[in-house]
Amino acid sequence: MKTKKVWIMAVLFLLAVCAVGCTQEQIPEGTFLISYLDKEQTKTVRVGYEPDADRKDTELLVKELLHVLATDSGNVDYVKPIPEGVEVTKTVLDESGDLKVYFNENYRVMDAVQEILCRLALVQTLTQVDGVKYLEFFVGEEPLLDTQGNEVGEMTTDDFVVNPGEQINSIQHAALELYFSNPSGDGLVREVQRVYYNSNVSLEKLVIEHLLAGPQTSDAIATIPPETSLVNVSVAEQICYVSFDDGFRTQNYNVQEPIVIYSLVNSLVALPHIQKVQISVNGDTTGVYRESFSLSTIYEQDLSYVRMSDTGREIVVNDIKEDTKNPLD
Picture (tube, helix red, strand yellow):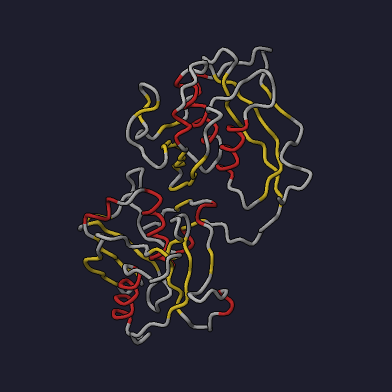
C-alpha cells in the first residue's frame, strides 16, 4: 500500500532528551528511545530506555514498548502517548516488516492533534525494533482513516515532516497573505505583508500574530477583537486548529460576523500546508461565534467576501516590518 504523507509543521518539534535531562548525544549507542509527549501535548520528547525483553525477540519487545507507551512515566514533563482508555488489542507483524497495530474504539475519542502525536510517538519508538519497518493502525478491525476519510496506510518516520531544530535562531523572509476587513466591515481586503521572522516561529502562528496586530494601512481595519490572545495554534493533516482566549467572544459589530471568520480562515489557508481551519475558545469547540458560525465546523477558504480596497487597489506592504532591530529576540 502506498504510504500517505502526513504533513505536521512546527508544532511537532522533536526534542531529544533522556529522563535525567541529558542530551540525546549523551545516551549510549544502542539505547532505545521512547517517544513521550511534552506536558503541553504539542510535540514528542524522546527519552532513553533499556528494555527488559531480548532485543532479538521482536514480539516480546514490541509488547513491552507498547506497554511503556501506555504507562505514566512518573515524570510530570512527559505524557504517555497512548491515553487512558485507549488500548492495543493485538499486533500482527508480517514478513515484509509491516507491523499492524489494532486499537479499541476509544482510539476515536482523541482529538486530531493528540491522535497525530500518538501516531508519531508509536512510529518513532517501534520502528527501532529489528524487523519492524513501518506501522499500520486499525481501530477495531477497520483501517485508520485520516480527517479527510482516506486510509492512513503504512507509516515510517519519513511520513512525518517535522522541524528538526537545525535552524534555531536563523532568520527567514516571508510574504504573508492576510485578509482584514474593509472600513465598512462588510468585506475582506487582501494585504500582503513582507516580514522577517525567526525560524523557530511557525508560519501559522506568524499569520495569527499579524492578524492580531492589524493591518499596516488605512485601507483596512482589524477583524479580531483587540482583547483577544492566542492560546495555541497547530496543524494536523493540513487542518489548522486555532484556539483563542475568551477575548475572541467580544462583540465588535463594526465588523460583520463572516468577515471575522474568513479573515482567519483565508489568511491561514493561504499557507501552502493548510487547507482548512477550526477555531476554538480555550480549546472548546462547542457553541457558536456570535449567532451562526459554529465553532465545531472545520472551515474552508471562501474568497467571495473579498473586495478591492477603498482606493481601488490591492494592498501590498513592501517595507519589512518584523522587529528588524533585533529579529532574534
